[in-house]
Amino acid sequence: MVTRDQVPEERAADRLNLKQVARALGVHYMTAYRYVRQGRLPAVREGNVWMVDPADVESLASQVERRAPDCGVTDDCDPGAGARGPVDWLGRFRDRLLAGDEVGGWTVVSQALASGYSPQWCYLELISAAMAGIGEGIASGRLAVADQYVATATAQRVGARLGARFRRRGRSRGTVVLGAPTGERHALPIAVVSDLVRLAGFTVVELGADVPPEAFGLAARRAERPIAVGIGVTTVAHLDAARAAVARVRADAPGVPVLIGGQAVRSPEVAGLLGVTVWAADGDEVVAAIERLAADRQRAARRKPSAMAVTTSPLRMPGTTSVSSTTT
Image (cartoon, rainbow, N blue to C red; front, side, top):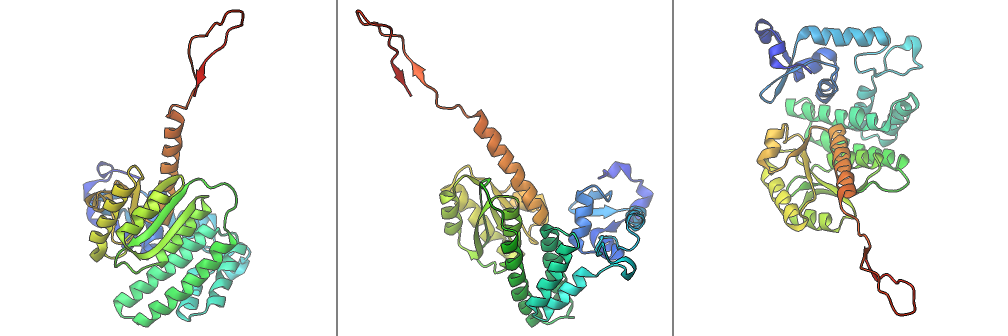
């Protein structure tokens, strides 16, 4: 990732924002964002907007083409496809969602998994990306609102099957509470993030959507080995409700970190206005933030003084050996 002073001013006017980058590469906006966060695509942050030099976009596209000639920039191809060329996983999956075809949608996911893609990729690049594209279609008038309801219900069922197939066994790394605040009715993003966090080995208390502040507080207080409370906000109108949820968690479970994200919280500055310092832009970053919080908790536990035996001076009784009086 580059800084502002590394880019000549005469090239500033030609730079592309991430929506333009996504269109140029033929990928979803959040995929372009991940390229920047992973350091694959140099970018300059101007306020809350990432700007990219067109030459760097061309370079990334050509690198991927050289590495996998049969694949597009997202590497979305079946490794065994050969001369058939790239597979449009996202397009195929989106079509099944719009058709309300759970079986067909699961077939696309199963084929992607068999081709070497991870469950995390299926959540982010199929389920999340498809629903984001459908949302954009509704906003532009290309799709009807009814299409979103059908697609959402189908995506929830496919996501539940994916989560059940890869449910991790073994000792939990701690508990994470996840939900959307009062009035926020988008449950699918919470379900997707919950499964991603479970895949990382954490126990998740999934509260769902439209959760009142007191439920967040109670869940945080009851959580065994709490790592964080995550609040997802999709629409700006519900930021005040998110602020109320944050305040209740702080009151009922002091010391439990609060993490916030979602389409309505596009920058750490917005998170700061809600009184939260831990912010995540997407599911990948939620998991990364929780990993960091878990590591912080573990380090703090190591530094905490352990209960040690306190031994007083030996008591000597006539005709006996020394006896130590010990308290714990």
